[in-house]
Each structure stands twice: as structure tokens, then as C-alpha cells.
Length: 228
Image (cartoon, rainbow, N blue to C red; front, side):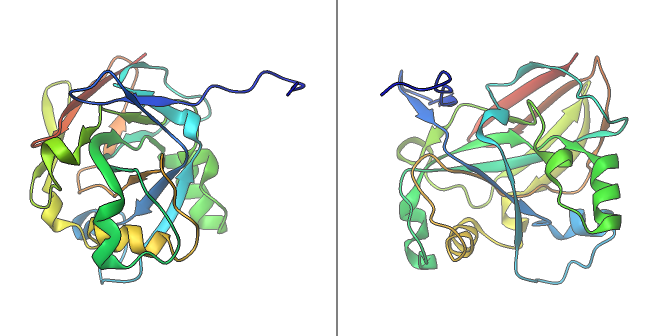
């Protein structure tokens, strides 16, 4: 079939213990999934239904590395997150069956133009320009469930230039991975290749060009980026 423009390449992520790669289809992100982060953002940490936003698939930065400081912001923030990679999907997935859809897990950073996000919140507008810009989703290699299991209580942390800024535990998530998968599948059909960013603990803050950001989750390895 002839196309009027070249078909864009599908972004892929490396897989621990394999030469194969994981093709990325869609990226879903859970907002305010750790109570302390909700409080630091001025919200109510009561357990309400989760809400979601998305990032384009080509915002993925496989394995981290050098990332350009984005235009149109003076307040870029880091948010370390557990990333879920799906090998199965569907609609209305029961919570009890949701973990069967998971291929593996990774460490991710949800980079956010916080000033643009604040303006969008004030006006009741979408967050696309605050969350979905180029290189806004660095992700580590994926650890398959067959190697690492399903992490439920593991430390998650982030440092900037060697100083720790975020530390929490996956057990502190308001909505756990099976619940998140089941909830998203009520609204859209999930599919193999989907990534889900599951929220960040408290301690988010700004970074500037020259900063080195290092983060990790016990059992899943580490991820590092440098702002240029």
C-alpha cells in the first residue's frame, strides 16, 4: 500500500533479559494516586474514582539519557512513577483478571510543565500541553513479570544531582495496579503495547538545564536523565 507520507516508526522499549523489544501503543497516566502528593498539590486525598490523562506514544524516551528542556515553560517538574506494560487488553476487565494482562513493569518519569498545568486547571482546560510534549515520558527497560513478578510493596525514589527528593512505597498507591487497569478498561479498550503510568509520591519539584535526575524502584532497576 502506498502512503502519502512515510509511516511513522513505532516507539519501542528494551526488555531486561532479552534482545526483543516492547512496542508502545498508547500511554495512559493516573492522576493523584498517592495521598501525600494529592496534599502537596492542594487536593483532597479522600479515595475518589481515579482520573486519567494521556501522552502521545512518541513522547517515550527509552532508557532515559539526555533530554532537551522543553520550550514554553519556566517550571518543569519531575514525577517518578511505576509504569505497567500490557501484553493483553480488553474492555470491562475484572479486577481479579487484570494482572493477567500485564507483561511487565518499568520505572518512568512523568515530566510536567507545571506552570502550563496550573493555567489549564484555572481555566478548566485539558492538560495536553502540560503533559504531552516531546520527550516527556522517559522509561527504563521493562522487567517482565516472568523475571520480577508483580511488585506490590517496593520502595520508589528520585534524586536530583545526588539529593533525594522523592521517596515512597508502591503500597501507598490509593488505587493498586489491578484496580487501575480495570477502571481504565471501562472507558477504552486496552490492548497489547499500552503503558500505564501509575502516579507519583510526594516531593515533586522543578528541574533546570544541567540537572541530573536519577530514580528507581526496588526490583525494577533505575532510570537516569540529564536536562540539556
